[in-house]
Amino acid sequence: MSESRVLVHNKPAHLDEEAAFRSRKDGIYETVQELGERLEKIRSHATTDAQKAALKRFENDIRTLEQQANGATYPSRLTDDDSNFDSFDRIETLETRALKRMEALEKELTPKRKIPADRPARDHETILADGTGSFTRTGKTFQGRQIYRDEGGRLYYVDNLHEGAASEIEVFSSTGKHVGTMSVDGVFNPDGKVDGRYLNKDLL
Image (cartoon, rainbow, N blue to C red):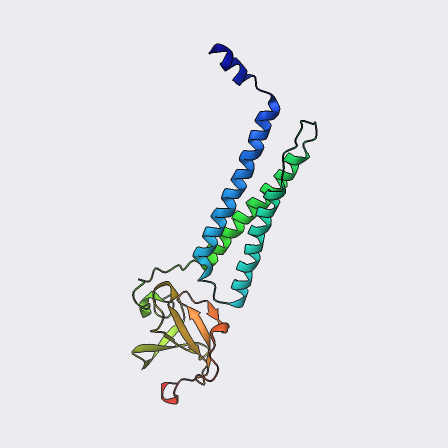
C-alpha cells in the first residue's frame, strides 16, 4: 500500500501538466455550452436588425471559441516548448471576452419590466404611463387602449396582440402613419413598421 502511494505522489510532472491542459480544455467546452444556452434565452428579445446582427456575430464568436479549443492539442512527448499553454492563454482570453460580451447583450436585451405571460402590458407597466417618459394621454382610445402623444407629436398605444415579455407599443407619426413599434422600455424598432397602416383621422 505504501509503495502505491509513493508511486502516485511521484508521478511524472508532464502527467500533471497534461491533466491540467485537458481540464482547461473541458472548461472551454463548458463555457461554449453555457454561452449557447444564454444566447437562446435572449434571442427572442432581439427585434431590430442591428440587435439580430449582433447576436449573429456573437454566435460566430462562440463557434470560433469552440473551434480554437478543438484545435488545441497537448504534445505527444515532453518538451521544453510551452507554446501549447501559451495558445491556450489566448483561447482563454477569447473566452473572457465572450463572457463579458454575453453580459452586455443580456443587459441590453433582457426585458427590465416583468409583464405576466398571459396578458399584454398595462399602460402603467410601460414607459407611456409609468412617469419615466414624456407622454400625455390624448383622451382617445383604439381597441380599448389609451392613445398617447409625445412632445414631437408621435402617437402611441399598447398593442393587445402581444403578451408578456413580447408586449409592445405601436408607434404612429403625427399624421397617423405607422412608423414602427417600441418596447415597453422605450426602445424604438423601425423594423416593426407596417406599410399602408394608418390611424383613423378621428384618432389624431
